[in-house]
Length: 379
Image (cartoon, rainbow, N blue to C red):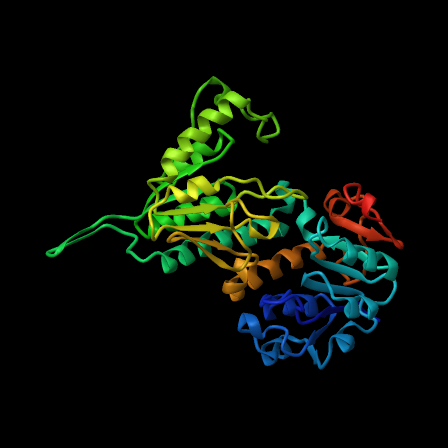
């Protein structure tokens, strides 16, 4: 008897993504897996049940029906309490589990005897690029942040020269040049904005300039040596931090839109924009904070709210990619498809190599316990 793979509807508020698409279902069925999908699971991503049925999935009524005796369970977010109770002991659960903040979910998964993998912990190595959920979703988040900024900003983005006068281009400042930041830069440039960006890693300067934006930093000797051999940022001196803060403050005051993207796994988001800096901006300016779920990079930010600070709007998103669910689901489903490929052999049987560096890095619960070294204190 072959393996059964289950996909249920997401239960987190506002979550419109789904962990599979007809394309990935077709590939699993071809590999010999039986696929069960809860009815309506794909509707938020514009994927109707009949598209999954045509791909070979069995559509069932409830989450419990989908999960009954399932060997592998795919989710976007962590399963609910009821879903965890419906898992058979030893079931494999693969999702973005938000492991540092959702410890109760990990404990429940461990108690149920599930082997759970957190997609956020997939290492950023060449072999795992196709499974890199953080990058696939951040890419879309950076794009969508600019679209939301353009919608909230009461003026045009590009320069427009007309008989009635000239419209000046919007000035966009991106703080944090990771995957989301780079895509935000590229999108803002496509829309005709004048774009600047900053990051604590000197190596990002070349990336920023290759996209047609200007890099903002105090470029002294300390800055030039501010990166470890592993590519991570070094802690800067208090003197450097003060010089950089003064430069950023004077720059923010002239910007129309600021987009912040800085997140640190397992820790509150660093404050990049203070209340004083927000107050220095012109009325009508917009700040888009992609770090809102972890407290925000902008002081005064509230997740999923628009805060009006004397005419300057601070917009915080906890799940911005849910507003572009079809593409986000398609990319996420392909990430999962590649990851599942590490767990099964060519005959469609469970055959994980538990010493595989990707599986070892992502495994968070197994054999009734929380096993990830960064999380063991949670158990």
